[in-house]
Image (cartoon, rainbow, N blue to C red; front, top):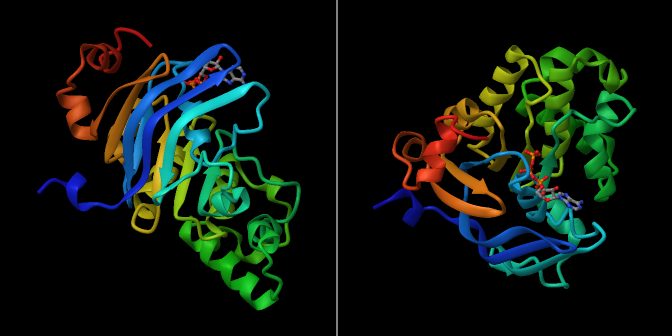
Length: 257
Ligand SMILES: Nc1ncnc2c1ncn2[C@@H]1O[C@H](COP(=O)(O)OP(=O)(O)OP(=O)(O)O)[C@@H](O)[C@H]1O
């Protein structure tokens, strides 16, 4: 039996479309994202990768002129339905951006931010969450003696791991990563990639990346987007060794993009 048949579906897109005004940025997307997998979203600049990942926690819902149609079923609830609780959705579907963007606060307060917003006040509980989240991103040993120091004093790679810890602190089910290593040096990039492989044991990860080697190294599934369409999605090994669509082959062999 294939992995697809045995794994739980976390997101199921059903004829998903998105327009920015007249611009049709996502076109009739029909595919699923599975539990405890890393799904990489690849494709040339402007193909809709960031737009897609931001629809998964409705980050772009408030962009002026945005219109969406179809369904995004998250754990069997269509989140495009107006009744969805956005605070709850974003607690469950966390996001990490291209550049580590810590708040200008202490390391501790950055990680405790989400749990405090969601009502956790007890110091002991917050201490435990901060420690676990920083351990999950392999940052604890580096910062445990300076938790009250400013987060902006950390290196770029540490800041990105801190932002991942901040996303993990609300105990999400899914972590969305939009080009999480594009601003990092090779060593920091490697650390984030190792972290992604570790995190998928506990979380479902959707990652936009420009770097095809990165997609090949860390993802289970790869989705190739082109001009707002999903050209193909399959097991990563299959996409890179034997793509079904000529356009995917042209892209991964560097003929365009
Ligand atoms: N807020 C916006 N308003 C209008 N158009 C937008 C907006 N955001 C994105 N677009 C357009 O939608 C299309 C998809 O953009 P998107 O940022 O999702 O692409 P991408 O694949 O992530 O690109 P890149 O790899 O360069 O980040 C592009 O044509 C872009 O210009």
